[in-house]
Length: 393
Image (cartoon, rainbow, N blue to C red; front, side):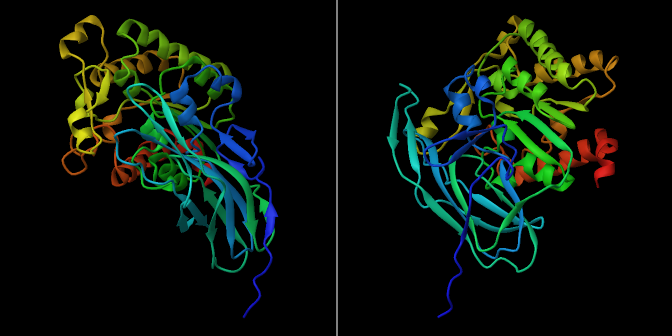
């Protein structure tokens, strides 16, 4: 029998990790974060869960290895009474092509009670995923981490040395909601920002936080302080489905968010993206809620609980937010030539809903993520941002 080569252990360091803003040392190894510690301290439990799920984060390296393994501990979240969520997927990309996928067989599971907020924890340890039989020769490898579960990375194991990449690409910082984080996408390179970034050849920093695109000042400060060649902000759905603020507060909050970002990036192309179509919230305010009869049947669906008549009192709907954002960008663009607006209905709108309905009435599925990502490339990278990215192609 042939002798298996001894694998080389490489610690996971900042030189290998892309898309993370901070790396926390843990008993297992390291945990990538998409917000720095000072910002995490200003948020809540929902944000803590979302930002620690490494959407868009990946290991990047050059190697001649034909076997790649990753030892890591995963944490999966679920809700009592709801169907189990799918296991997180690791995507291995070799020289730009998806070459393999794997999931942990075991993971710590945290079950959250939606009524009481109590958590049940079912612990598990470190597991190993393996990608064998890779093509021989020098190759550029990206190992994308799951977009929907927390991971602590213990070590990278390969049958040949790895070298961190020195590839220079424009950095795209994107902020948005669970849709931008990748909810209901099938795998990490299947989220719409990952699809767009890989197509356009940019270095993605995905600050899409499930339930937490709420115009938080600490998020604006984080974007302000993060190196960026391109910035996009997808604003709206979480403000409606949390029923967070009224119209009077919305305008100043958006202006303040943009002002803070401009303090650090005065000339970087900045794209404000209004909400995608979401029929339950187009003209009905929040808050949003689980559809309890559907949940009792094991189906996750959402509903809007507000009254459309409350719009006259300043309650927000997606229609109101689109109108307001378009007007604010027009006003500011007079003195900011690098500020742009994209109507989210051009990414997913009324003409799409019959063929590609939202399965839970809130989040797009994998096919719709691909549609949104491809359209974003056409409308942003080949449109508003074309001149900025042209010299990198």
